[in-house]
Length: 461
Ligand code: URP
Ligand code: ZN
Ligand code: ZN
Image 1 (cartoon, rainbow, N blue to C red):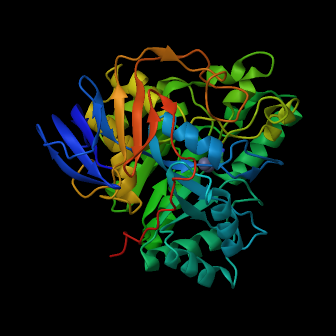
Image 2 (cartoon, rainbow, N blue to C red):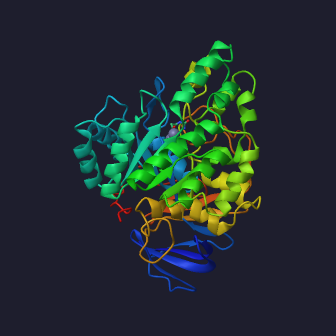
Image 3 (cartoon, helix red, strand yellow):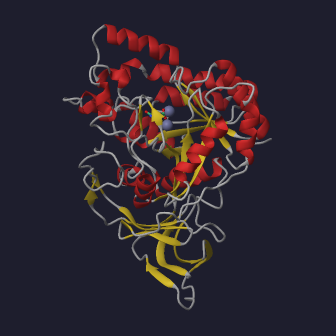
């Protein structure tokens, strides 16, 4: 059945204007003023509301065996949470450890999503070792439509690659035209500093940041940049948390390295004092790289404004406080790293970015949707409002006032890092390929509507 979205304030990465949008089947078929209403069409009155392209979160973890436990969400909870928060496409990190085969892992991760996701999704394929079987398996995974890799320059012995493996991965990626996303920290320094801090009796969550300070992250970025420069690979630095890390990437960009930069919402709105909260509450704010001192926030907001930082993701990695974060009582290195954020990325960016004047509406759409679509081979199917694009649409109510709470969120975790935070706006209606999945801020849709999005490499010469 056709769907008409009437009279909304449409915002794309480049334009804002008032018009109607007509969707037929899964696709946007017309945009204009006073469009004729097809017989039998459903109508959404978007007067006074923003109409955004469905948001894309290019960095989430859903199925994640990590640090002796498993992330709490499954695709049912994570995709519902994403949709209620305006995110219509998830790009999940498929993260085998060094013992696992890439193809087997890809099939395992795919099986966790198939038939369970309410929103569309795809994967970045992590390369956590490179042996004689890896190359042909990675070629096969790219043939199956996964056009991005992931490497970790941290988590030694688990996800982390050594320099030989990093070089081989980037060389192959360059040949295939596949972009490589990378977690950048110097793992040797982390290990040494963790041991030193623990030996000094510094065991609480507040010592997580000093164990991997900004310099350690910047060194990781500089390391990746040298490898990218030598191989010619296109790279994307995930979750940059601080000025020195962004500057290391920008310095490489200035000398011709094809590098794009992501930050994630927690770094924009939280600071390291949260990790000092008493009664082990600080563990709720432990992620890697760590939440930094507040002075980095204005640098990051400005780098989004100038578009030096391309994307704002979440790095959603959900662990309960009870029984999971608590595994690190008495030893901060055992606190499962990660903050559940997939539901609130868009609202936090809007309330604490747009409303506070850090970024304008077009930048908001660009960093939370369009750039991810462009970098990861989804544009213009996703990431914009245009005739021929998928009808992934967010009708956003800027007059909504409410607050975040674990009591009402849709993620599976027993806490929110943003408990009680006020919001000035929310997604009212959300469609995925023309189907209304959220209405009045509530999930009303089909739990199995999500599809795996296959992609072709877009970073070849
Ligand atoms: O703390 C984090 N970031 N947890 C998830 C794993 C990763 O490094 O992305
Ligand atoms: Zn990471
Ligand atoms: Zn991550």
